[in-house]
Length: 114
Image 1: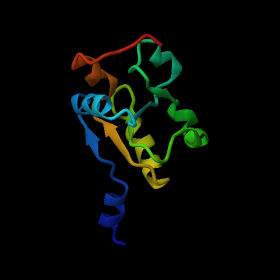
Image 2 (image 1 turned 135 degrees about the vertical axis):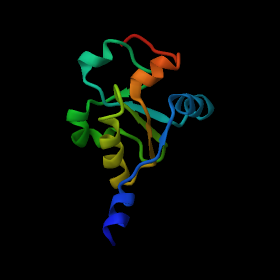
Image 3 (image 1 turned 45 degrees about the vertical axis):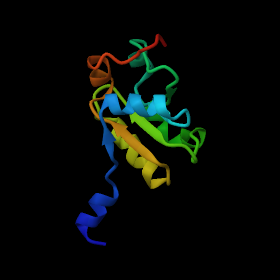
Image 4 (image 1 turned 90 degrees about the vertical axis):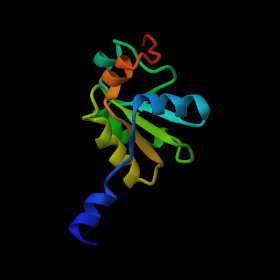
């Protein structure tokens, strides 16, 4: 495997917040995982999101279902791609939400109190 192949193998697809919301509405099997810290989630979360801070992520992978599509999100899309790559390497079907919660809020999508 060449360097380019190795880089591409680690790449995880991403979708806009609007597309992520569409997927969540269309398929009840889709799981959204929020990797922000608890202090950040106090500002609101996506209804039904699984909250696993990135700092705890490696030790909590077993909490996530292997047979369902997963979307990852953070505040601004810096940490969630890290979690998404970790999930992909572990064999999960994963897609990252580009722009994070900043873009989710900007799009006017639903947010619930934590």
